[in-house]
Length: 142
Image 1 (cartoon, rainbow, N blue to C red):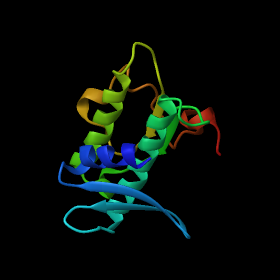
Image 2 (tube, one colour):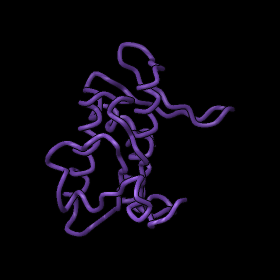
Image 3 (cartoon, rainbow, N blue to C red):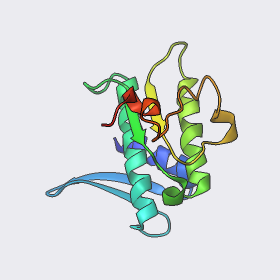
Image 4 (cartoon, rainbow, N blue to C red):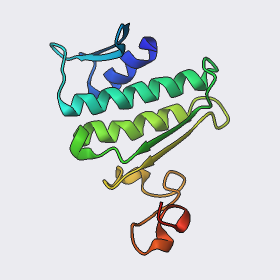
């Protein structure tokens, strides 16, 4: 996982950053080093996104027993910063260009508009709204 996690962290926040995954007696520990280990709310969100993308990359390569499917429910620019939020979409597009067939499905639900180039087909597939109920996910109150 670390072999995937570190490059994804670097791609999201810059080449000077380092990402690391370690197993401890308390579970999986994710760290991002940008001149010191960081633990802000934005870095915590970044760690989760990078971990999920790393897991999906391993699934794409057939290294897991889970399908290469990822759903991020509403990562927000306010939690990450606009530049990191935009790079999330760039990484997905780069992964999409690997191979000649569709290798994964990545769904991002968002209340923050994606970068302009991702606001139409084939990237934008569905717009949903909270009201009226017919425009909600599955057309019902969940």
